[in-house]
Image (tube, rainbow over all chains, first blue to last red; front, side, top):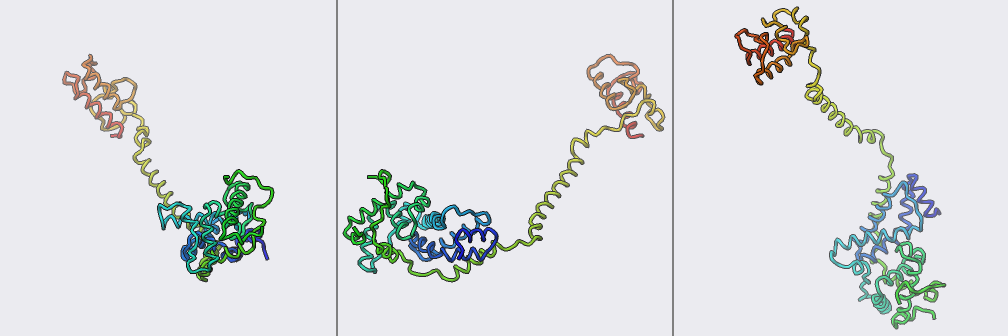
Length: 175
Length: 172
């Protein structure tokens, strides 16, 4: 199986099938991220298409300097934010992108997890989700958010401390 | 403590249960999968993007603007040569010398030597201007400048010189 960098090389040479392979590999990840940002199925699909359209326009000549997810994260966030701004002008960006899903019909544990996450400051919540939901490393999070590595670690540490001290999420910690 | 003050030697998430990531995945799972028509749209966009461009279309893209530019250039050039300074400042046919003019048939009765007001050996409109300035300034005139022999050197004599100059230049 070709790596992302090998697929990028093929796409730069004009291989449309390679682009489709890259799309299939990252489609669900982008879609979940878009759904998390937008909270709406159709909006998430629009963001998905717009993200890969944006990527397509970079070929030939695209150079992947980090992981594919590190590259895609700010793109998806930016596209989602623009879409949300059009739908809800005047609202703060943090409100637009950091909404927690409605858990009124979910299991209790999920409801409590949602409530605990809602209590976190937006910057800390974003790092927690990028780390444990989106699967990015700390270095990738730093690159995607364009912040120093130590800032990423601080935000994550402070967020996990709050969750550890929260009785609704204490059981997620091994110590 | 702010997010930027703490220094870490180890990753801060070492003691988190895998259940945390699992439950987050369930919490943020989309309620529907990506439909196939979206996959097809992306695939089609990729095929269009990487499709080889027909050479004639590439050529055609530049033909229309190039043709329009050429047409504008030709029209501008034609207008310029027809009405530009070059056409106005084109050297007039050299004024015939008095000697040459004397050989042309049908000249005005005025003597060409008389009409050569500025004495440069040619008869042209400048002679008429010179005489006109003399008349307007009421300066003393040469008696030879009385072109129509009415005893006066006036605007009628100026007209006579001008007419002689025009007839000579046209070869009349």
